[in-house]
Each structure stands twice: as C-alpha cells, then as structure tokens.
Image 1 (cartoon, rainbow, N blue to C red):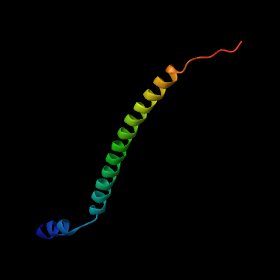
Image 2 (cartoon, helix red, strand yellow; image 1 turned 90 degrees about the horizontal axis):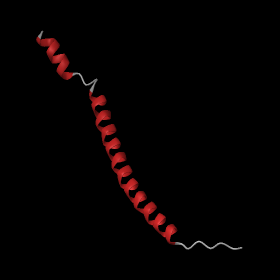
Image 3 (cartoon, helix red, strand yellow; image 1 turned 180 degrees about the vertical axis):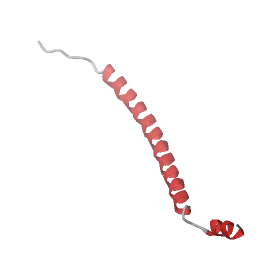
Image 4 (tube, helix red, strand yellow; image 1 turned 180 degrees about the horizontal axis):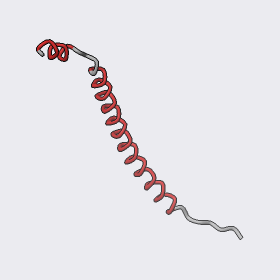
Length: 62
C-alpha cells in the first residue's frame, strides 16, 4: 500500500495538463480584457462620429 502511494506521488503525467489549463485561462482573460477595452473605445468613437454626422447640414440641389 505504501508503495502505491509513493508511486502516485511521483507520477507527473497530469502536470502538463495543469500547465495548459493555467496558460489557457491566462490567454482567455487577456482576450476578454482586450475586447472590453477595444469595445469601449469603439463605442465612444462611433458616438462621436454619429454626432458629427448629425451636425452636417443637408444640402439639396434642385
């Protein structure tokens, strides 16, 4: 029984899985943060452009 516990403690088969999970979570978090920042800036820019377009006088030629 003690031998099996020692074997279990020395196995490193699942260690790479933990590494990939941590890396994937970090990349996903970074992607979400970037999307939030870009989305906010894009919304502000679109609002600014919309305001400028509304203020342009409409000229109709007959």
